[in-house]
Amino acid sequence: MRVAVIGGGIVGLFAAYYLKRDGAEVTIFEREYLGRGSIHAAGLIEPYRFDRINSLGMIVKMLRYMARGITRVRQVDPLWLKALLRTLNRSPPQEAWERARWMAEFSLKEYRRLAEERNDFDYDESGLYEVSLNERDFEDNFRDCLNSPLRPKCEEAEIKGLGRAVYFPELAKVSTEAFIERMRRELNGVTVAKKEVTDYLSLKGEFDEVVVASGVNVRSLGLPITSFKGYGFRVIGNERVKLPVSVVLNDYGLAIVKNSGYVKLTAGFEADFSRGISEGERVFKLASRAIEVVRVIDGLEGWRPCTHDGFPLVGKFKGLVVATGACRLGWSFAPAMGKMASDLALGREKGFGYISGLNRLEGLAEL
Ligand SMILES: Cc1cc2nc3c(=O)[nH]c(=O)nc-3n(C[C@H](O)[C@H](O)[C@H](O)COP(=O)(O)OP(=O)(O)OC[C@H]3O[C@@H](n4cnc5c(N)ncnc54)[C@H](O)[C@@H]3O)c2cc1C
Image (cartoon, rainbow, N blue to C red; front, side, top):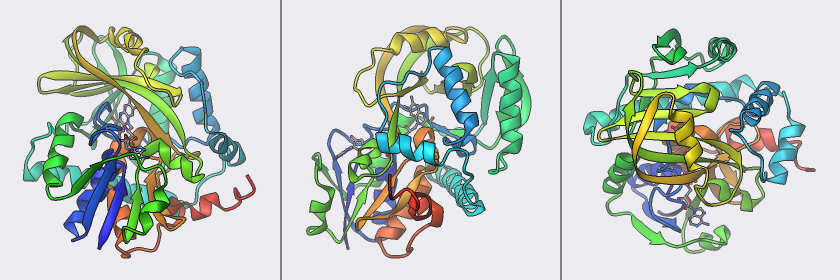
């Protein structure tokens, strides 16, 4: 069976990985280079830190971020905005949470399995500390964790010199750069075409199935996906306080992840589709409380592909298999999304209920 995968970001790579493993003849179409859309990320494998976007709580959080100058709104997808307003505070069915929990467990298990085969991607399971510099944010955060339908494990902790933290012991991290390299090796034998596909449906004649994993660009199919842009920098720095391997400064939406030979700093949650890393300096300023940046190795922007409710979208649409929308958790859910997309393409599954988009897009038809 011949399958085209459009997009060589982390979701497309995992889709290609499972398709290849299950015997399909795979071609990846990537307009830049493998990993381009995803490599800037922090590399936190944190599926339990899921936030539902179309909730008042999330909107309040965004307004707080806007007041602190962390979130700016430049451009949103109009269909996404309508879908968000239309479904505001509408709870997803229990089945959606169950599927998301399965996706979280599957994804964590797959990263661990790949690391057990060979840990050539700086995999670390020492968990994640989410620090709040102000007390109200800590209380909100801890409550969110305790009330999460995904039932994550979380504990109170403290990072001396920074503040109180919610500690998630189950979560992991990878080096995104090393992981993309690992995927390149895993995908040995898969054809990679450096090409921008402008008409996804045009590939239907040449291939038996087409998987569209082009991140925010999936919106060109008329699906409500918007971009929240952010920045990732590899730096060499001096810790101002003793930091764990993975820490998020919650108040600034800033992640600091220690890898062999460098630290990854990521931040920014801007409603924006544009290119460019002009906001980089701001990231270092935010981080300066925890780390002094001595040298910047490189930096890149990325566009989180977000659905209106925050749940990933993996389903069949217009005869194509679509896999996108994991927003700030693309790495965290990518193994499950890739496996689900592969199973849909190979005809092993017909759909995944809410996650496949049919239920949640019902009633939005008149938008
Ligand atoms: C600052 C920042 C930090 C983040 N940190 C984390 C983290 O720690 N953990 C986590 O789980 N997630 C994190 N994320 C989110 C994660 O990076 C995204 O959810 C993820 O990259 C989405 O993956 P994707 O494969 O769906 O899309 P993308 O990564 O956007 O990949 C899509 C690919 O498709 C290609 N493409 C697009 N259109 C076409 C076309 N028409 N033809 C051919 N190719 C095309 C693009 O070049 C790109 O390579 C972070 C995001 C940001 C911005």
